[in-house]
Length: 287
Image (cartoon, rainbow, N blue to C red):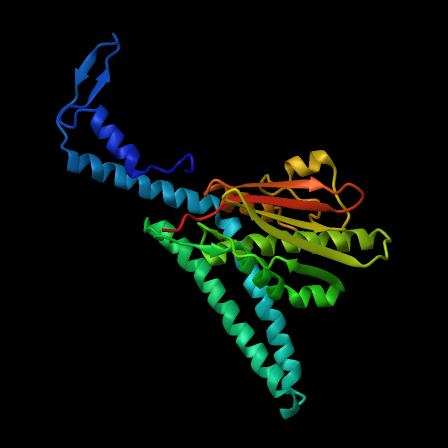
């Protein structure tokens, strides 16, 4: 629960501990004073109002994070649109590629719409109900989503060890966005190492497995790496080692998403090069 979020449990606890027919406050002498009458319905309305204002305040704080999330599908739409424009100039011979580009644009428009729907649902206080996501599928979808980036930068992504079904209590779009953020960070780290003169082959590997009621995931890269101090600070909002291109929100968002269902995420410097992100999430209990 966020610090400024009031839940029904808080309201129930308040109404049990405080007589709803008599609100009291201490006087200057420390004694309790009768402040009038208020029924339970009025108390609930007051707390509903406070909770709504708290959600709006929280949305204001998260506006930068929302902008960051929407950049992902818009980035993919922009690439697909440019590919579509070039293929249209080549005529009918590119028909299969044209269809693929159109499908990609449609898919990413839906992704952006889903992000907006989730935000509006939170603002209105609506529950999302029971949700589940396949973590292995989320990782593979994220790789496919970022394929144009990996192709353009010559980075090889090995997701052979991500062929695992691990159901967790997230919606699929949230799980995919976690991997999109992590994979983009890994790709940018590899580019940073290249900018420093390194000429090796960029590699990212994803390993996912289940054990003892949990799903474990490791995303490792051979990029520029980072210090232990940087690894500790990486999940703080707006912390970035690439201020010209980064927002410093990717890993912060990942920790928020993972933490809300009791999961853990850590960034660990590689032993010889690069870094790895380690994730542990409780498997969703099925009936």
